[in-house]
Length: 241
Image (tube, rainbow, N blue to C red; front, side, top):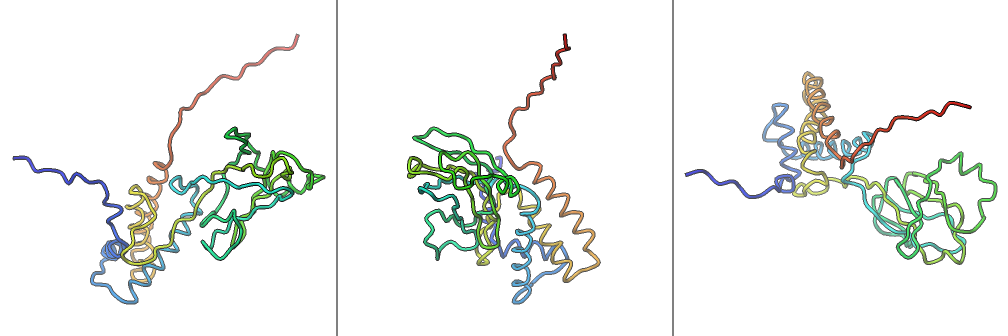
């Protein structure tokens, strides 16, 4: 009689922080860790998640939200370091960057163009009011702000800016927590933590662990996202008469 399968695909969510730490220590030849060694590993895991933010866009952390426009208000703040303690109605926990935005009026969207600081500074009349067509994002230590141009007027008040944004990966927290990471990144998460721990406990294994980590992380990053069709068209030249 053939053996049955488990019928589940939730290993990544049942893989608690303490098991990730145990797996990483085992990869560098350490077992039975406790106390300060666990705390050190949890801190390293949090640092590694922050380093992942420098590796490019993580599609599982992309989310959607609306900003309700206020007449004569161009700047809207989204706090990313805390989830409370603010009276700003636009505050969204964990925002790291705004990817794209549209002016939404009765579910009809008009795309906005993202501009940089220099382009915004070059605008001659920043207080001009009307339907926003551009936005400028500032990524500060404790918050992300989005500045609109044109500044919404009375006819735009109560309408929305619909935007997609990148969230920060959630902190590790308790040892019994699952991570805020999809199953594709579990292998590189374990090998990455092993690399970080090798720097502290097994310096002779650092290069070996780094190679394994970078290889697994690259595979996970290349698999992340949602591929779309690509169309290539030849460029047509028309000779002058």
